[in-house]
Image (cartoon, rainbow over all chains, first blue to last red; front, side, top):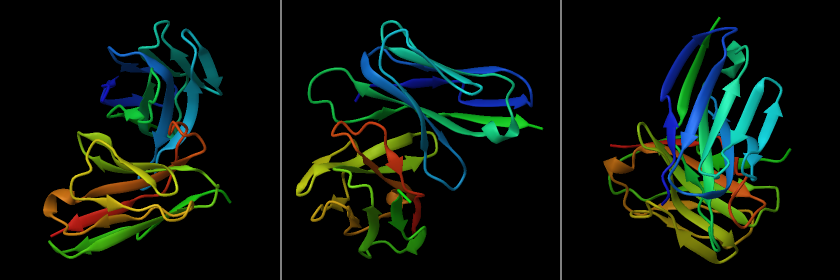
Length: 113
Length: 113
């Protein structure tokens, strides 16, 4: 199983601040996804990135896939309390026959009003 | 509404008493999977299935069984539960054979005493 390291593990910020969450690996991934999980619920897919260097925006969230497809970042602009949750990155290893999505351990974000 | 339904949401049982957690999806997805989520360990895959009658072990299959007799259902069976199987369990499905872009159920919190 390929390892995905997420940092920071915990993040507590004030409403209106910006933040960046990182997802790193020594392995190459054919695609990388970000999910958000709220307490008592299952993770919900936010975005999938598949091309090295790709940048995708979802309102105040900006996702980037590294050029070498080994890492990704999630940047939130002007964080809101509704952004609070556990952010998980998940990668599909590069190579034929890859059927196991690998999850990072997550970044727990708290946005304080 | 497209969804993955797990039951029960909460379950308390005793060591050795067989139990089944049900999972059903209404999206006609071929791929289904079970995960467990533990503090500090993240989401770990237990078993997955790419089609009816096709199942494969994930990263932590010991102590679990699954079956895929119908496309929509993917029950998780614990023949003889032990306390180390106390965890939060998630069923998920995907429209892709690779298991990307997962749709998760709301989770089953299992406590084995």
